[in-house]
Image (cartoon, rainbow, N blue to C red; front, top):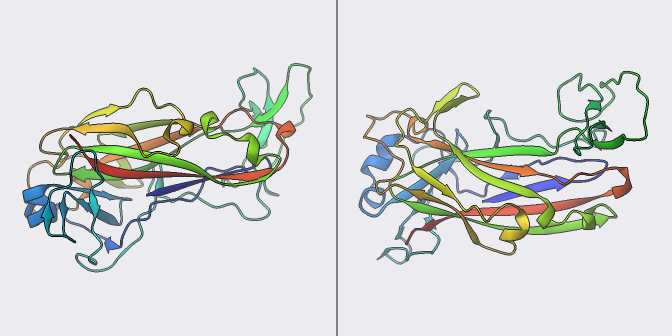
Length: 295
């Protein structure tokens, strides 16, 4: 699973967070988890974006051996689609089922005046068309600049999510790398300066799609030592544990969609304070997540 974070002084965005999952059906039913031989007998993790899902097995189908050793990655199913047609799993904007938008050439970062020195703009252009970018549709009321004010980003934080269920305990591992650096801006954005927090949400309704009503409550233990992307570079590094002997899947649900038996896994990022002195350019930062067998 690869998360791409694109940032620049003139074009800032945590965007296009894509999970490189195999294609699976649009509606994976919970009965698959309840009846599939490999999931039932050996355990599996199923992850998706609310529409498409991928399966990670503890049994190594390619070598017909059991099972994945402790502290090793689970095996992603690559044998084909299960039922019907699916698509690539893409991370969604937390609280919705919408993929992160990519800015057009005429859209730039929304910045404004930081009046309380917290690194985030308090007075900014109004995002009239609510697209998250600064463009010709946006407006700004009259303002004056004082000695204690500075230019800052409107929003330094962003959160992306996917939905996970399982029939076993598992660990979450992460690895991060800066893929590209351009201009004067890119080199100044260090992995260690990008904060990261991993969490789960047990139940909710995102974009009209409820989740978690039939999911067992996992004991989620985040690695408290991991607070920034520099700590998972190059990785992979264990960032969280899902502790529950029989997994997140609840009782057999008679063919209902998989979402009621899924919880939401959230990854939240925080950029360091940035102003115009940072210059121009871009930094492309990749965060890769994977599921591992627990000891």
